[in-house]
Amino acid sequence: MRVTGKSLFLTSVLLVVGVSYAYGDMMQGSSSMMAEKNMSNGSMMDKNMSGWGNGSMMKGENMMMQGGIDVSMASPVRGSSNAPVTIVEYGDYQCPKCDAWFKNEEPTIKADYIDTNKAKLYFIDFPFLGPDSAVAAQAAYCAGDQGKYWEYHDYLYDNQGGVQSGWASASNLKSYATTLGLDANNFNSCLDSGKYAERVSHNKESGTSKGVQGTPAFFIIGPTGVMTEISGPQPAATFSTAIDQMSTKAAPEFGPVAAIILAIAISSIVVLSIKTGLRLVPR
Image (cartoon, rainbow, N blue to C red):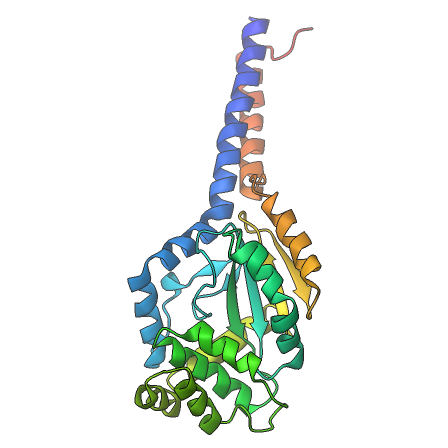
């Protein structure tokens, strides 16, 4: 009877641990998995974007989250949507430090991680350096309507001028669109209408909610939702270290919900053994 009790106890604990561990992993990874599912569904993403373009608000159930960050109104994903590590960059097109990181560090990260499907990048607007910053951000999304978000994004940084010097005025933003071969009438209409003003405002609020005060600010998010923050235009080596560390954290962590379930289960087994007189350990 003693052997049976001990075996029952050990078997029950192992079973509960296994179920709890799986449940904790499921709960912890659910938001990241949902975000990937939504991103892979192009029609859903297009529908969400058009909703914000005409001024209607995003419904909570359609929000896409990466490590607790709302990326539903961010840029199109740069890289594979299935890449295990996510890089979220909060940036301002007039920010000299953002420009420095874009030109000096991002190419290495892109070649080593984004182009090799190890990481993906979202750019989220944090326009805080003047009115032209917000208009430039809107212009990038207008270019995105014609399938050239990232080309326009890159062009802005490649041609960045002084803060509020006029290089990112509406007239210049329109000329950049023409240079990139975009349909001028559609682009100009989009920009003049303020179609994406609310979207850009939403993204800035997203950064504020995460404690962002300046740009560039980065969040590196692992496959289980574990996240680390990098402030400023840090060297590519700093990002490589963070991304590599996140890649090794693919194993699920034992979540708090799972711990509670395990504690309740063990307590129930002990109480049952006392009531039935079943010995759990030999004397």
